[in-house]
Length: 199
Image (cartoon, rainbow, N blue to C red; front, side):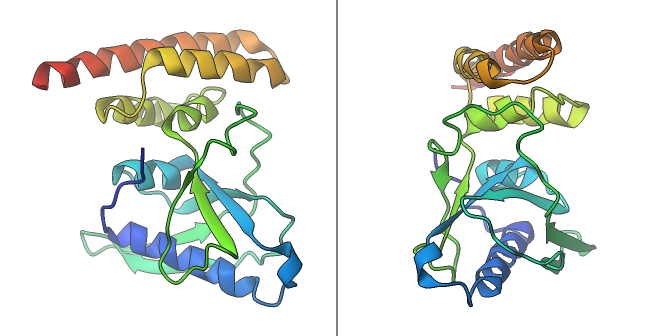
């Protein structure tokens, strides 16, 4: 499943954030490239669906990169409101549930004016994006999971299998996460039949 080709103000701002990451790494030696940038959270959701915007880009990198805290872009949304999108340098992917193969199975996203031989941008696959939301499992996370289900990007069987595999590496009490998996699968099943009836 490829990222949504929707050209939104948010998508343009996201592209500019990545372009600034590339510029920040211009002086790095050639041997460090390519650097893979793995995008999660609301930014990944928007790239997959064209829906929901966030103020931050949650991303990790395949190499240890030295970036400032000032990688941000100002833009106006569809309603003309001023917004800011910034790279969240405090994002840490070790705090939540994540499958061991999530980065291997991530999807490449082409970004204008970004050389993929230097910065390869990848987003979590929809099933792994869901898994990453299960340990926190806020109301927003639930809404995101329902959106992915409505778009036909996930199914409950794949989510359950992927999440249970990820639990093998999870540090902490797995009981709440297992409850989140059950609830998430019910939410997905509740959304997908509606889609099938329309078809």
